Length: 179
Image (cartoon, rainbow, N blue to C red; front, side, top):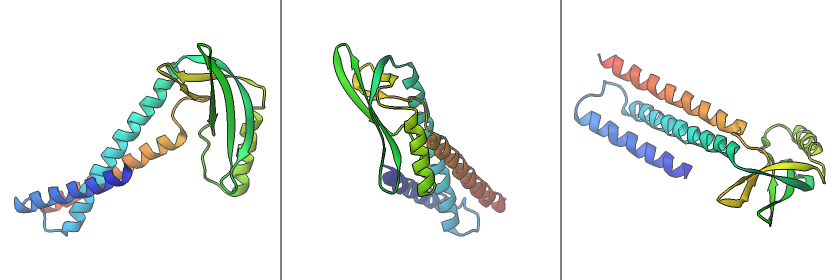
């Protein structure tokens, strides 16, 4: 989906540039610079829109109903990119479900720090521990141990803002040169 958005953004940027060029509105600067500036504006705005919606969706999960669950498996998974893997069993209206999660653990850092982070997290979730599970009331098999936006969503939102500002700065600078 992200690839399609980039392609559509580029095509829209080219189309806008062609229209501006035909109307003789573009300043005497390289057309590629104008296309790139418009592309950045569209991409940044799209990223902001997408990740803002993602944050809202994650926050909405906080009001999902909860039920008690039990950790049935807690281990470090992966060979190079270590991550915690916690599996819980829970029931909703007599139906038993199971959820496995990495708890939104970031996948960056060196091998040792990823392993240490995973070990620290799984120590909080030993087998047999009782936990609260947030589940989707319309699809109880979809559940989360931790709810709320992950750190990387905010980072992507910030990147979208930076890209938008860079595009606006470039576009504004391009158009101010003309006047």
